Length: 79
Image (cartoon, rainbow, N blue to C red; front, side):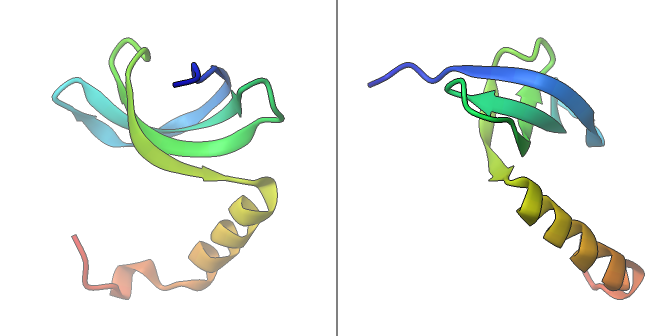
């Protein structure tokens, strides 16, 4: 299996808090030396291990922001 290369270009923030040494972060990451994308996933405290996540292009991130701004989040019945 080919080695996965990544470079965290910028940390945009932490979503929620730390649980058992892991925290969900949104970063700008360059995967395999390509142009950076927004990335949301869990990272360990040392930022060396990661779990599965979601990667978004700039256009997808803009769409997500629009959807969230247009949604009454307080009215949603969710955890």
